[in-house]
Image 1 (cartoon, one colour):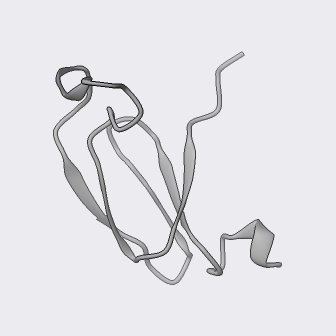
Image 2 (cartoon, helix red, strand yellow):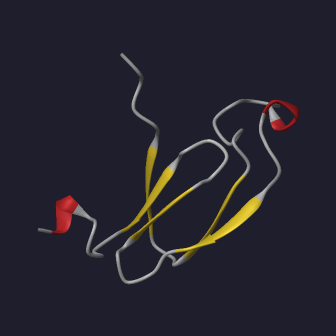
Length: 65
């Protein structure tokens, strides 16, 4: 059984991911920083680590429903 990827609720449509934001001093443990754009679907997923970014109040935000 695999572990689900982390999901972050964000308030902007442009987000960045480096794979190490939750690791203290862990920049060397992550991946190259990438910038992602959230489109009308209301979400974006990092191609390196699979972290999912959901726009607060957007189409993919279940809390807004």
